[in-house]
Length: 291
Image 1: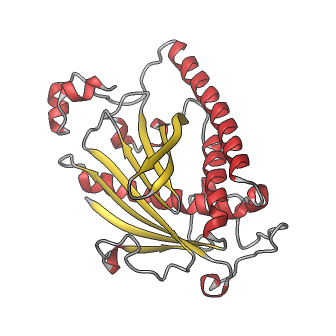
Image 2: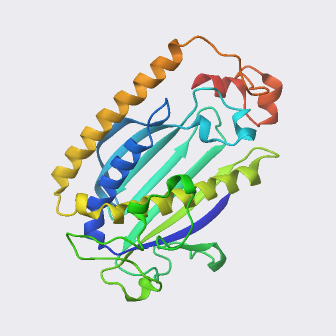
Image 3: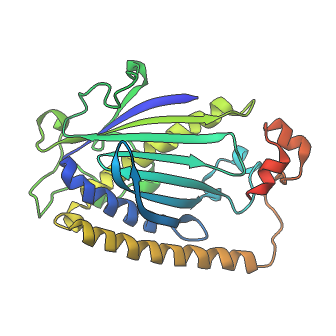
């Protein structure tokens, strides 16, 4: 298992980001959905926890086959999704990612939001994260994949008309007010012999990119969500989820009804290929039961 703690600062307050986070996730999910891939919301409902109180639980299916590297695609079906289950007890959240086809795959993200610049230690109150496992991500200067870059989301050019904040400049985390930090403790495991290290590194690289892009967007889009009430952002969230689910389901239906094409890949195992499943550390009865 590979664990890292990411710290991402933003020129916002924790109270503001309660709205901004919900808006950003909904809009980002909508933008990333299409062509049979994206995010399908299965459940979104209130929940309670003895320690954290009232919150919101969501379950999503993330379809992403084409985004996987070639060496992983050889082992997954053509319609492949990861299940995201999240419990939002803001300002503390838990998110877990699993896959029925790969039962030894698991990602857990604990998040705590603080009104500081990332200087707090042991925010989760149990084991102190080793210093070499703490990663500061800078939404201003850290590189993101070219495909995600948008000039309107470049925070060196960004100015908020509603709040007067921006642009961000070098050293902004030490001088900007207000400022908050997302502390994210990320644990990932893929306990399959021969693939564990490479897959866990791949997961963390992608998590890093997602965190950078998402937090940049939350700030860049501030004039779209600042001033919304929780009721208004929940209504926006509901509308976006309905539209995204409809678009995704329509794309998947079209894909299923299309004539089969000659596969362009070399080989993809089936869930009954016992020898291959054993190499992956997976039993065929477990894998096939939930596909």
